[in-house]
Amino acid sequence: MTAAGTFGYGTEYSQIFDIQKLGAIVCKGTTLEPREGNPQPRLAETASGLLNSIGLQNIGVKALIKEKAPLWAGWRVPVIVNIAGETVDDYTKLANELDGVAGISGIEVNISCPNIKAGGAEFGANPESAARVTAAVKSTTSLPILVKLTPNTSDIVKIAIAVAEAGADAISLINTLKGMYIDITTHRPLLGRKTGGLSGPAIKPIALAMVYEVAGAVEVPVIGCGGITAGSDGIEFIMAGASAVQVGTATFTNPRAPLDVLEGIEQFMKKEGVKDIAELIGAARG
Ligand SMILES: Cc1cc2nc3c(=O)[nH]c(=O)nc-3n(C[C@H](O)[C@H](O)[C@H](O)COP(=O)(O)O)c2cc1C
Image (cartoon, rainbow, N blue to C red; front, top):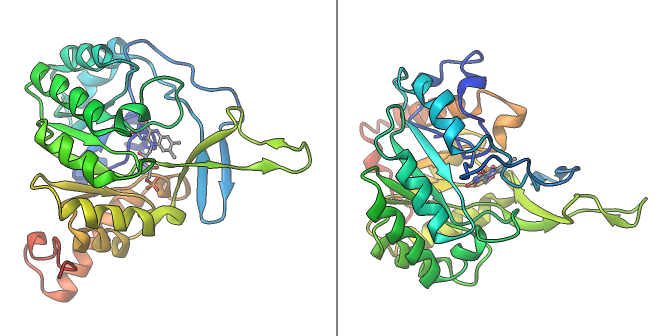
């Protein structure tokens, strides 16, 4: 899958490679109203990583349903809409709008965005509020729901158990880690919003450990994300217990990265004589 916020609405990449070959496309984080996002600068490159403070710039759910869903309805690849809000009510309204829309195959509930003032990661940092949002969305829609967790919490396993019990069909992790970059020439943080979310290869070992721990604690499928740039990274996450993986930041340097990861996984399976990916899921768990 593609990771939310790094692949637009999929349409932008359909000219570059055959996106229909992917497992799923997760689109940009979507809110009830359109958002312009945070002040610039919103991106900073770091050692083996990227800091962003985009702040959920998006066209809003109504335009998404009107302009993007009709295109998706003609695609073979399923599209999952990533949603974010500031209150539980925002999330249920979003789920309600998306329910039954042709072209939308699932909802990824982002309770983990570090780049907005209210809501977002606050829901994902505590098991009670994470469960409340999950249960509210689940009872509003017939679509499968993925709940996306934040690593910016003291115990991600507790949050994962809470959202699984509240009805999540799958759990995706991780979103970005809070980070900062200081411009020593101006003596100020470089990002307009001071802090941002760190992604890319720098976070892979952290994401992998979290996926390993969460996959050992819940029955629902786990979707691994964080620094995956090649098939071998994807295999690591699968061996840690993920049933699927998402590719994000890697797409900024290689637009074909999600397909390269998929093909790399297939090549590994061929080389090892593995017929079904299920044979590899959790293989590293002792
Ligand atoms: C520019 C940018 C925008 C992002 N926007 C979203 C978003 O809207 N919703 C979301 O759940 N995650 C968002 N993310 C997080 C990614 O989906 C992913 O969880 C994270 O970047 C870790 O994966 P990666 O290292 O492969 O990028 C964003 C990440 C980046 C770099």
